[in-house]
Image (cartoon, rainbow, N blue to C red; front, side, top):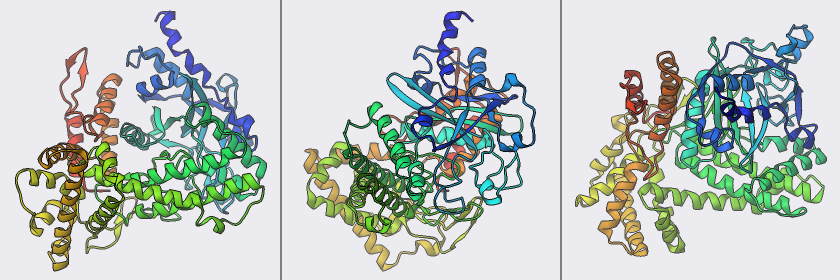
Amino acid sequence: MKSRDLLQYRAFDRICGAHPFKSAVPDGFVEYPVKVRRGGEVFYFNFELAQDMGLLPVSTSLSLNKKLNQKLLDTFSIEIINEYEIKNGAQVPVADIRAEKYMATRYLQLQHPGRSGLTSGDGRSLWNGCFTGKGITWDISSCGTGVTCLSPAAAHEKRNFKTGDKNASYGSGRGDLLDGVGAALMSDIFHRSKLATERTLLLIGYPDGTSVNVRAAKNLLRPAHFFHHLKQGQYERLKRAVDYYIDRQVSNGEWPVVRGKARYAAMLDHVARVFGKMVARLESDYIFCWMDWDGDNILCDGGIIDYGSLRQFGLFHHEYRYDDAERMSTSIIEQKNKAKYIIQTFAQLVDYLINGNKRPIKLFAKSPAVKLFLDVFSQTKNELLLNKMGFTDKAVQLFLRDKKNIGVIEKFNRVYSTFERTKSIRGLYSVGDGISWDAVFCMRDILRELPAWFQAGGDWMTAENFVQIMRSNYAEEKDVEISSYRRRQVRCFQRLYWQIVEKVALFTAQSEDDLIAEMVQRSAVINRYERVTGDALIYVAKQLIKLNNSVSKNVLHQMFEGFVRQQVLIPGKLMPFPLPHKAGKLIPLYSGYQKLFKVIRECREGI
């Protein structure tokens, strides 16, 4: 390869463990020497993200050549030299030890004993550093780089663990390639669907099925990175961490410049708004993201992080709980109150920073920030439901501009939720990774089919037809019986639905026929029949790992790209069934790849 081509990869040399957080918050991390981990293979590389970050020129060919492959392994195939190895005198060749030490950050975590974060943080991850390109600074971290002293296992058993130890929960320090592939797919789908999230830059697989999963975001700090300083009453540490976070947001152009202590109030306002929007989106899209009082599994900007326990449901399975060995998770409908408590904690935190006195958390239960969070949540839920009905963003804003219409959509939302939250008579039962109680109705189906029914000249749909359309495969006969109450609810649903259509047509100066035609097209995409769920994603990830042995890396990249693009359910963005190419020619469709889309259809109602 020519020296000119080699220059394309020099940017990766700047990712070497150095990070400004180390000097900004000296007590916010544990530092580790790292060594080369051999035997790895680059399974997946996100070219688009690398180009967005400025790691690669936009002109770079989307091809994983030998030089780029080796540069990625040299940069990211690493493992910490932890306390266990040091104590037991592990011999590591000097040539394999990196010059710079890498950090595992400290933050609050409910898996640890106590509630103050004295021993918790990155248990199997480290921060590779940060990278500034195109005027934006990105954080880069890797999961699966070895067990640290901040692991829950170390805190519970009060001893250091050898990396790879499988005898204790959270004690291995390894990443899992299957989880990494699932996270790479889902995070890219979410990103392109305009849902804030960390993104997978790179996956390195090893012969034993473990992996190093490299993630990037413009700011990888979580609320938990602040809350442990708050819980411990460490004012100066908290101030340094928050100032660092605000400075990054400002330098990246995310926030305007605000001087003095007013910057803390501005941060609180921003966090309350983004969390209100984010939690409404999660609930509306049936995305389970385990939020809790620790502020661990979410970024400060509302972005999703840690896909290990994340699920996208096909129906509103609101009784599902993830089994985390020693505890059960929150449910999807509890996410709102957990997020509200996070905002309440932020209100306490900002009050502490401004006044220098840490007051009890209960005093902030009805703070202006909490009220703002709730208001934004309600407003966003209304907007999202109108969007799912098939209305454009402009139409939604015109409709909600009249306060009288807010009452109408809220009434419709209540009827909608009556069907959405109906549970099967089967009751609670165990699933692969927790417990669940099946939902009965698929609301996407009725939102997709109802405008088409009206477009075809149909009158009010009968209760029997209405229920049959949205009946899921989980429903027993008793679950879908047509009682007099259910019959009234079906009529009420359609009456309010049409009332909204009439008002939107008036506000947008469209005929009702033209508006319905537009809704048919939009709702068919937004409420598409084939939508990936957590169950389907597990199969897809397994299949891609299997196909890795029979296709080139470039074809595998096309499969990743094709699958993701096919799941971006935004009108005008949805792609047809993706066909892999090679040298400008179609390559024969692999049966395993074709089956991915069949599985999505089969698992569309699952968890």
